[in-house]
Length: 323
Image 1: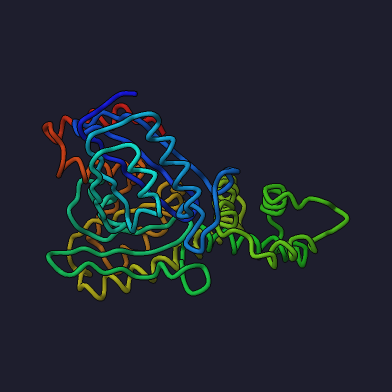
Image 2: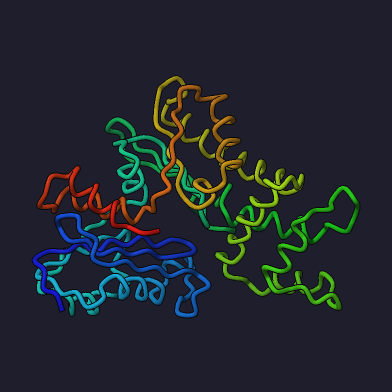
């Protein structure tokens, strides 16, 4: 065991996965943990698999390893996931640090304020601007909202596959890819197994995981997949419009920060979204970071509790992190 004076345990829990990092207060990375929805040790939660206690526990234990420290800062978005007793075993003094979901993302992109567009498993738009009270739009879950999210894209893909044989105009390369991904390829069952899948209340993370297949097929030229990405991006654009209009930002210059797997990894989705936003907010400055938000959480806490110059701590942490 390695005793250390102060550590930061930062957690990013989402709809599909949980990331955790353990960082010494000088920016040295001590441990990393990761648990996704399809990990056998993950658990389900009405707020997303990455927010289940099992998923968070696995990521946290992997990050902690056998490290012990005198003081531990436990940094999360919402609560301690019932892991207080577990974490106490690793420290003599436990402090809690809470941030809203958009703060680490802004910090990671080196901007103090702006509009954060989260298009991951779920979908939401967060606004922080010039001393006004931070607000957010959507994030209502897959039944009431999450417009433009990975789940939205996955659902559109399922619907496209379900009717792909109705007429040649519905034909799509998504059919085979989606059926294979869901292990529904038994030809004797036709599309009955797809209907059954939809009625079995599948984990929304599993549906959202299909967004990556849609992006792949769209880039390969499939017209249906391309249309799905445009439809989802347009839906998110509507939410952004509400945010821009409510804050009166149509004529102002502001950062438009993309986050979440869809916004960060689907260039086709992001570029279409930015083009649409430019029609009503021409001075918006689009930006994305490929670094995970958990690092933004850790850096946010390091700024407050760090023992070294911030720029040095940031460089040290980012240099040591492995995706």
